[in-house]
Amino acid sequence: MLDEDKKFLALLPSLGIYRSLVCLSGTLPRRDFFSHFALPIIAADGASNLLFQKGIAADVVIGDWDSIKKPIAEKTKKIVIKDQSSSDFQKALKFVRENHLSPSIILGINGGYIDHILNNVGILAQTDSIGYISPNLCFAIRNHLALNLPVGTKLSLLGMSSGKINTYGLRWELENQELYFPGYTSCFNRTIAERVEFDVREGIILLIIYLNSMEDEGSVGIGE
Image (tube, rainbow, N blue to C red):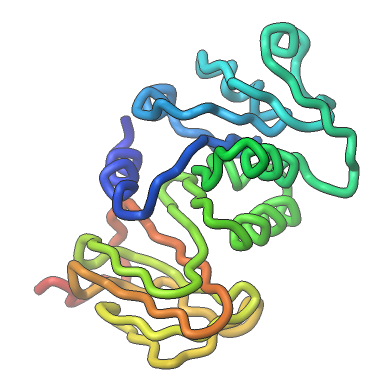
């Protein structure tokens, strides 16, 4: 298992209780990652092909079934939704909500072209679910959040589409700062304390945490 996957699993209990894994057609973790969960796996259409290549069978495949390969389709519970006004990701989220399987851990959110990725991030920010694409963990903050992270952890904060925030324990603190995307963001910030806090006063802030160690100008002098 990758070190980033281990760090994600160690951090997960402090983030909440999740009831399902939702897989999209992006970068998915290695097979051994999935063995740490006793959660139903919901695949959005073509993601079932990626899971199959890893020797993993989705419990449910949702979408219009325009991407799934025939051998997989014959062995998988399918839910066909022909609604072209919503994405397969949205269809999967609707399914988990209606079946009391949310919030979810969203995997493979970086699949497709740039417009697909931006759309996926925007959809994620409207939920209580979290997204994991090694080495990044991302999720929306709507009120107060405190986390224990290694000193020097790299992170970014973006308004979705706007939000006002106070932070505690960052190298470049934000005090009643309005963030909005596109526009003014706090990218590539760093933790300088083991416990960091985020207090969102208005709107929604997307937090992106880097779980790998990164040396750059922002890390100089931290922890010395």
